[in-house]
Length: 377
Image (cartoon, rainbow, N blue to C red; front, side, top):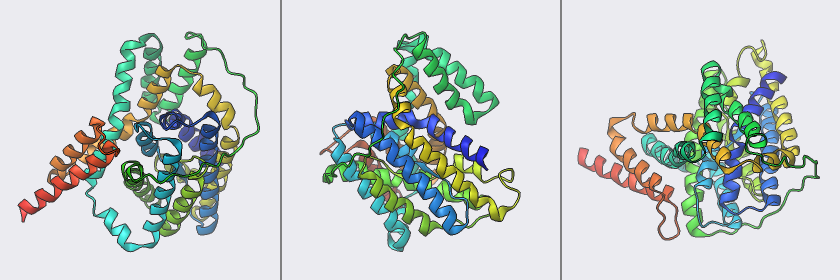
């Protein structure tokens, strides 16, 4: 159980921490606020995993919202206080989804293709950045991509983690980046006053809620169910929603059910007795708390890396989610045109009336879907 929890936590942390740091930079987080962001979300999902696993006797593995971090990183013109307001609202909406059937039905009524089209549009610029930096910084980037591709042939799960390790080696050797002072400093959670800007709540908070539910929570529950457990949906949404709202006050974006890393912790090799496998959630949660305490050292190391390496690692980490989003977006012929509309508008990066592209993409896709349904009738 300990080895499975350790692998799951390290893969989850190492493969997307660069993206979380990019999100913090996009909303103007200070170094102290960035450290608080990472620590708060590590503590929250660690404690949440322990609470849900102990309470429901089901192995519950939580993760931060990777698509959510990509959405935040793609945002412009938003300050940290406004972002925190959106994080708090998103957490509240997730909690409401667990207790109010009408909210659940409203979210479920959004076509999968449209929701996936929005996610694909958010992820596309990060994947494109890999090609862009390959041209401008090929000496640093090509070896990193080579490591990713080679390790992917052996074990796709560790490919991004290997790329991050290669990026660190390249940064502090070939690129000549001075090694940061790895001095442990006392960790301080920074309270950030939320500012509820309507444009940011609509342009960031609502899309963050939708991508978290559609691309994280629903697949996460499916993984738990596929391993023979009945997922405690209402309890999980309540814990992650309320936990996200509280952690958001210290800079953290949303956390949710895990999917890929959850599969590592739910197999028969974790514990032969299925009824005792819930204990992996305790080990997993404890490791995340330790990662949160180690945040200042890890963050200082990654931030010292060249921008090209950070962008490429983040882009490589999002290739697989992008493939899944595109496949889901265009799977159904009935919603294919609406999904394409959502994808194009979201990927364009347009912003109108202070509202980001993800919302306009979703709105455009839903309008096209409504028109298509009226035509069929």
